Amino acid sequence: LVVGLSGIALATPKIEVRDAWVREVPPTSSMSAAYMVIENKGDEGDRLIGASTNIAKVVELHETKDGKMRRVKAIEVPAGKSVELKPGGHHIMLIDLTKKPKEGEKVELTLKFEKSGEVKVVADVKRSQEKMKH
Image 1 (cartoon, one colour):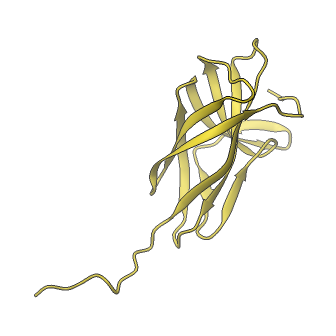
Image 2 (cartoon, rainbow, N blue to C red; image 1 turned 90 degrees about the horizontal axis):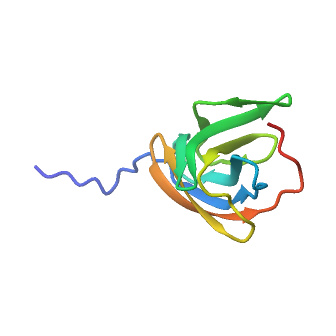
Image 3 (spheres, helix red, strand yellow; image 1 turned 180 degrees about the vertical axis):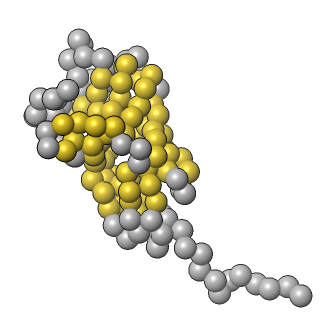
């Protein structure tokens, strides 16, 4: 007996990333941050659980709350919703930079999701108007 699966819709997250950018930092700084909009167009939630890049030795997920920054284990990306990683909120910290990002350059990031696996992103390096509070 052969049963076709064509009529069954499997619940899966469908992750799309847009507007990714990395903050340009002064030559004296050893860290930067990455921001983006992560959209889950699927019908199942997912979680960003990590990231990596070739310009930093350590990459961490952070959240700024009440003016304080702290590391978080994961960033929830609910089904059918988008989450904005932005200054003053959730963001990806690039720590112990091996290369300083300069405005106009591109930085490759690999985002790691619990269900969707790895998603490669190319982020533009931009100068931010606000000062980093670390």
